[in-house]
Length: 405
Image 1 (cartoon, helix red, strand yellow):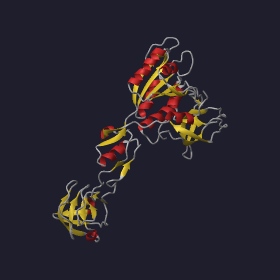
Image 2: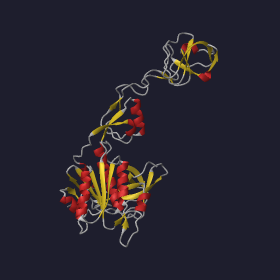
Image 3: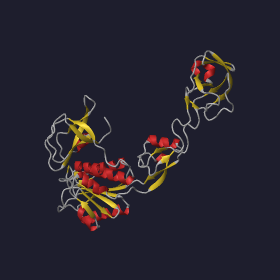
Image 4: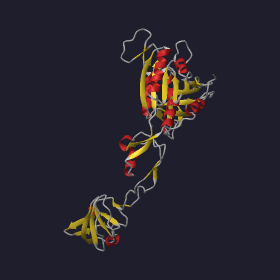
């Protein structure tokens, strides 16, 4: 099977993948979920003209010349509108959030007043509209403020609550099952014998899936045995996983059992080689409704492949609009040789350049087994196939692994 470009491989992974069905959830569970419908406001905010300060509601004409003495006729607290109206020469004490009474058109803050019994002396003028939050200043009933496909933030949930929505329609969370294969793999904390290594890949893959809002099914370590591999695959199907992610054993060597187990279960194979470094021996296929990503065993390769393929797949199933991570521009901080037929995704750190543009500095050794370098990296520098040699100071494209500088 010929090597696929990263773009063509991703297109095959995402082909015909529809978002999962919608469900209604309470607001306190909505943070990080993806909206299945546009959400319109059920009310106007503010619902009436409200005072933005503690002070006195007055007619601007009555306080154009100060000091001015007005007669106090009542009090307006938030949630307790005044029953009357403010006429010429009158004022009402008002608190922040109180409804501006009819007749009043400005608020004089309390610092600019003196109270003498039932009289209020206004010491500074206040123009019409001053310190008033007009009805609908924030939003109006029927206005669509949250769009389908949006991954909800804490601020979005606050807005939805203000829009008077106790529940929200969101897409179901994708289920991602993960297992690793290899007789040599042992759990962290184990006493290792010669030839054994500590299992680490799955922890990053599961963490990455969770960070994208997926539910994770940990199937652990599977020995290099076809029957054991088939049993793990069946556990994923029984758990109704939307995606099965395997790491290691996806090639065609004598001890690579994943493809054999998947084929025994009826895998519809899409591809198993990608023009990608790190990550050439990556596999994709379908087992009925379950998507399968067979990732390499080398930890950096597994992570880079998951970042490039698992993340978009989870996002598409979750109904997000921003399916693929967005490349950004940076300045290259080191010399790079010409590239071959595979796209390179180089681990790099970021530093702030003198003009504010981030500078991407590839780590010196790009071996796909080096987890310390991956943990240190802030981004991946993208090198297209057959890219010419690049120099420090050239522009480059990056995919950030962390937040902004």
